[in-house]
Image 1 (tube, rainbow, N blue to C red):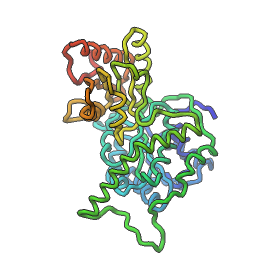
Image 2 (image 1 turned 30 degrees about the vertical axis):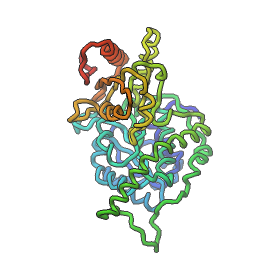
Image 3 (image 1 turned 120 degrees about the vertical axis):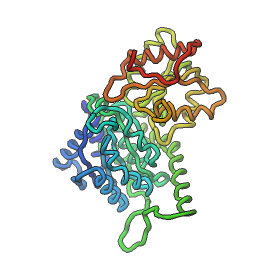
Image 4 (image 1 turned 90 degrees about the vertical axis):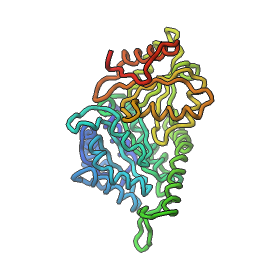
Length: 391
């Protein structure tokens, strides 16, 4: 069924189709319309689940964690300070390897009253143990929620997944969305329906908390690290199966556009990738060999895939929507720079910070970044980190 949906409503439809057993959420801008839509589905009988009204995000995360270790399929959603407030339970959830699924509608965090889009909140949990998927469109939001359940509950993975999309720029954007048939979603999720995983069962002793020391703890963490690495191949398999059923795919961990013969690659994530495609098309008409690499999965970081995509390139222009304090750059730039040591002939990199606190990443800004990168390739002295909001 084709409908025009906002990003939040697309996410809600993905959750509805996944048939969760327990949903617990606390509303917070810009996530609130997602919570309202799920409450609407539940009130109309379109979702057969426990809808738990909580007094805050810490309880929301604790509720779904308990339900998940009891064998349930679960969901919560939050943003910004809500993500910060649930941090203790969120880290515990990842530490226990509970296969929960969450949406984070990204928002700035430095100012509690400053309700502005940005990616600073999701970067704060990048090392917590959650798999992070970052969609570009409303359709990809819905599809990513479905893939998140398939990935989280896979017996080879068993890790929580967060689908993080741009607050306001995607959460409140209306686009054409193809809502899958329930039967097709059931078929896609069938491999993990009642899949084997540790569950609380009456009369059986089972230790869930990783409150252990020494070698057993180290072994547990080693296995967690290996599970995170297995995600890199598992997501390719899952996306292939998704494409076979629904006819859509997104490039696995890194989505590329006209990058094969590019000398300059614009590297970014999230909604601004669409604007970058328009700039790239115009630059190609002007004779500039430029392409796009969009990070679709931030955790695990696509280290090996990025090496393949950037091999033979001369310049990488990174567009960051968050700042990495202590490194004088954005998070995407810092993480990608670590990849260069794996390459025989690494490209030069420049960072362009933009889009903080609801400011637009415009085509003019991306054209400016491209011009700076092209000039640097010709030998012009250029700062490593640049801010596009200023002339």
